[in-house]
Length: 552
Image (cartoon, rainbow, N blue to C red; front, side):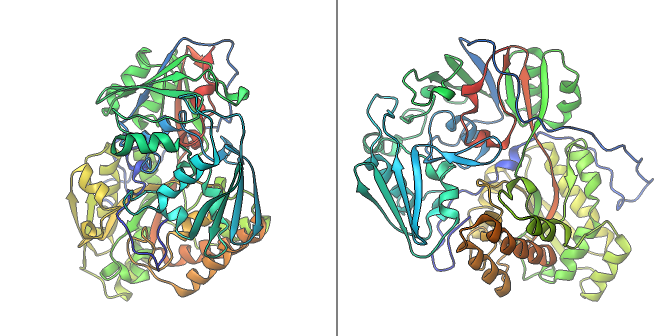
């Protein structure tokens, strides 16, 4: 989600997270390529695991591999997998996003919605920060107001874009007043946008808050221990944690940073580390057969897409966008990039985020949509009709993981097979990150890749960011009918009724393809032989999953 059309866009970090996710395979078999026909592969089979066995006892410590060092543990900037997988165990939000992707009360003991423009939170009593000071309504107001401060430049500003005021209206009560009805605001309070920090700590740490020297002082089951830059972060169990059901089963957890996919794989195979999220795809077959632990697949909310970032060029014609999607061998991409552990899709959301949706909405959103099977001849005709034969596209990629090369080469092969020309430009990872935050970085760029995850149990989050003028509407796509449907849906409180409007938005996006959906894939997790108790789910971004891990 991002600033509304009426709000000046500010440079905020976007969720490229997913782009770092899987250190994946490089060989690509594409029907669009010249040469022999690829062998037909049996589809990979997997089952989603909702939970693992309860621990038999507690641990002194365990180690967890993180693909990268967090950018920050400041909740205002924690917008990536590496950041949030750590932060979720230390800091807590007003609401709690659970492993099954439902919301329940968190630091807010209850929430009410007395008018369409107000949300009222009753703050839980008996909660203390890690320095022992009690949680107050004042801490909540201070924490939330940071997202409205231009000097902070919060990555989560989009959740707050309709907020007029955040005020303490009782001893333990906080009232948020919106400019207009916004059903999504409270849903966003289960993620980093709803994290609460001590107001005193925020004032004391200032610019050092959330970095390796300043740390954080929150209310979660673990407290911040030590951050050794470039190496690791250590968390320590907080013995005065308020929720007995989530008291940490380990006295300590150490997150070890390993950028290299092979190093991560070897550390898991050898038992050097006890577990990790987002397993490199090349390692999945090896770890499935490992006697050092279990490779598990969990619920995900991400769709892997090609973002159309220039609608003034050839891709401005919907026929060319349709043709490119029809030319992509998306099953070949799944086989090469995630070793077959994925499913092609024609839409921008997963069913996992349609919590509370009606059966009719699901049927409309996923059944009554245009399919784009691979069809080179039909795609060629569309390009010819659009008068785009011989037009040039620029695709930007980065050496982040080997799957990036898969997406780049697959896109180039698909485009060239239907009469388009593609230049692949490789930039640094930092320059790639800028594509999501700096419009000038996207000048002259037609396409780039993302795996876009949602942070709330509502698909409207996805379609809100594609409205006219939204910060994350990277190509400047505009459809008045789509905008009207999304805005109407935002004002609907009932999830079932709202889902039916959102389904219409999904249909429009499916027809117009502002982004090109490729596939969805499960979250991967390796749980070593010493540990158990973790729930495999993308909720590791916001739920205190490490607290549930104990001894087998």
